Image (cartoon, rainbow, N blue to C red; front, side, top):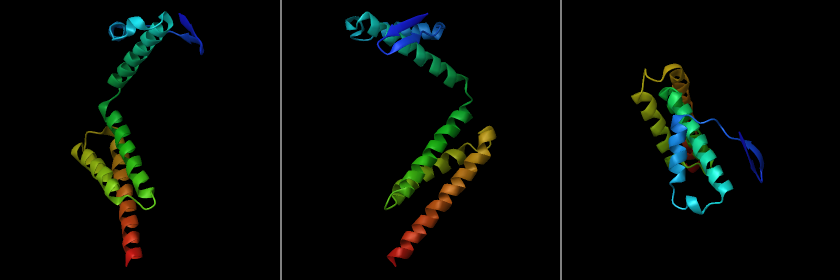
Length: 139
């Protein structure tokens, strides 16, 4: 089954039971009845896609999802460290969050644990190097 929109033809994903629940919820949203039939169908498709995304996340090991988030925090710390001037306090919050997650979940992060521990060490070393270089410049 497909749906034509001004953006072109779109396949409508096959729905499972959870998707039906989200589609029904979409039908009950305030203002849904005021949408055009095409907009209603787009809302149903979006609800089905959301259900599929939720299903994929629920099938992914929690350690993998957490590792992904920890690496996002790593990137946040790196961004703050690369600012001119570096935002050391903000980077420190992100680094502390990474450290807390990785140390609290020690031996529970599976295949990702070694990479995460290495990432924590790398960002900590970068922080110390940048902080020390800034202190040297000030003196």
